[in-house]
Image 1 (tube, rainbow, N blue to C red):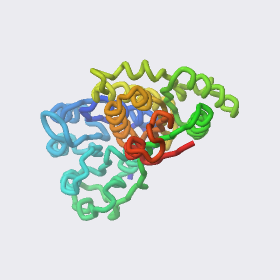
Image 2: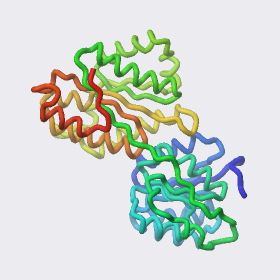
Image 3: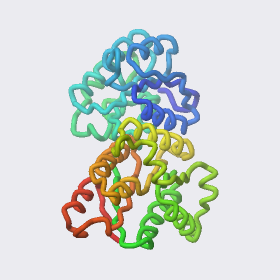
Image 4: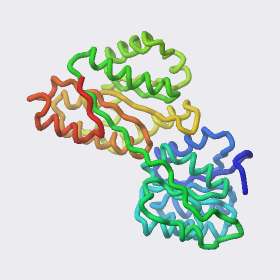
Length: 341
C-alpha cells in the first residue's frame, strides 16, 4: 500500500475559477503534493490525464464539453493508474454511486471541502476510500467492493466528521459591544493559527487593531504572514456592486481571490480562513435591504463552499422596532447563529 511520503502529481479539474484556486491553495499546504495541471472542462481533463499520467485527479461532476462522469470513464482507460477523487456540489446518491462505480476512490461534497479535502487526499493516496460526511446517510460499500483492478481495498467506507457551516450575526448596541464581539472572533481565529479577513469601517478596523494588541496578539506578525487582512468595507463593496446590487460573479471573484490568498498563509490540515465585517450591514443601514439580503446569501455560499467561518456585525439602531421586528427576524434567518450585545 502506498504511503504519503514522496511527491504525488495532482491534476485539478474544476470549471469555477475561484473554487479551483481554493482547491489548489489547499493542496499547496501539503509539500508532498505537486499540482501539475489545472483544467476547466471535461474534454481537456481527458487529454491532460493521458498526457500527464498524474497520481491523483480532483474531478468535478458538472463540467462543460464533457461531464465529470464521462470524463472519468475515459480517464480510467487512458490513465488507469491515476486515482480519482470527485469534488462536486452534486450530492445525489445515484450520481455518487455512478461516480464511484467507475473506479473513483472518493467523493467530497463541495460544502465539506474546507475540512475534508486534505484528509480525503491522504486516504486515497494510501489506497483507501473516502466518502464525504454530507453523504453519510447512504451506503456505498458495495460499490467500493466491486473489483476494478489489482489493488486490495478495505471493505469499509470511512465517513468523515460532519461539520456545520458557520455564518454568524452579531447585533451590537454600541462600538464597545462591536469591538468585544469582533475581538473575540478574530482573536480566537488567530490563536488557532487561522487567517482572518476583516472588512469594516476605518474607525472599527483601527480600534479593533488596538484591542487585539491590548489582548497580547502580535497582529503585526500576522499581517506580515498574510494571516490578518484588513480592508475598507465601502471600497470592498464598490468592487462588486452593480446598479445597487451585489453582482454574484464579481463578488465570488473578489471573495475567492481573498480567501485563496489568505489560505496560502495558514499551515496544517485543519487550518481555516475566517471572515468578519460590515458590508451587508452597511447596505442595510443605507436602506438597501434587498441588496443586504442578497449579499448575505452570497456570503452563505462562501461559508458552505469554502468552509469559511463568517461573522457579520449589525448595529441594533438600524432596525426600526428593534429586536423582534420583522426586518430583524429577516436578517436573523440568513445566519446560523445570532448574538446580541
